[in-house]
Figure 1 (cartoon, rainbow, N blue to C red):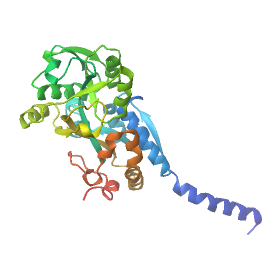
Figure 2: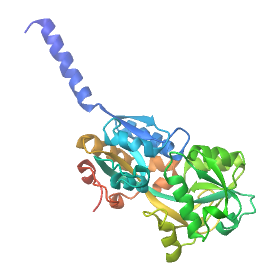
Figure 3: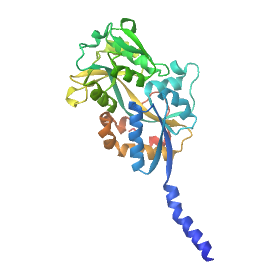
Figure 4: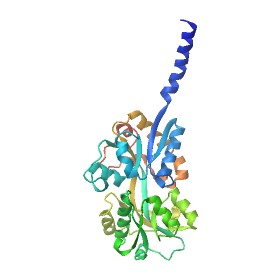
Length: 311
């Protein structure tokens, strides 16, 4: 073999392991500053530690990202159970136009939500929200009004009994709350976003919802995948000053049917291994449970995920 050919051969052999080890993917999130975008950043961080370049691709809303991920233009997405159920069934935000090719990867952790007020507010219970300023509209964010409508219904109230202040998105809701244009906003218990809002406004307080079966049934008329789950004050979560129930559903990592099994398995393994790291920034991620990560919402799971989750 000629010397130059030997050098080329050696160079190719040296590069081959690096090329094989390189894994690239993208992840759709909400717009920067929101809780879902922050979750995406943490997932990208632990993926990076595992040698995976997981690039963040922000969208105005997670709903808008679903068809893009299903089409394979972005590898993964983050969305709540209700959005994915809408997309799969072609209802509500996807009325008459179901999204084909979606595959669940894992139920990452339960989003436990209620409404929060400033710590010094005279609003003590959900019933006190009657006549107060609440966010409404939400534009392209399909779940906003359904979530608040469900919380109010659980407490025996309706949107007609509050002053509706139009917001365009969850980010706009946060801006309105911080500017004192609304009296309450959706809390995501244990989120880094709420920790920052707490610092910005000088303290927050989360209002619990009724947890009885009748209240849960009223809530599910607005959010069918929701359940009432307890949160304990002893958990030390920002804004949780007493034991309470919250509107809860799972947040999912999802992908398309065409995504390779190898990258799905690799990203999910990185998340499993990095749970403690993620929970340092997003305390609620401590609730991630591998054995329950295959929670059924009517969406088929990707085979690359089923090697790691469930029983």
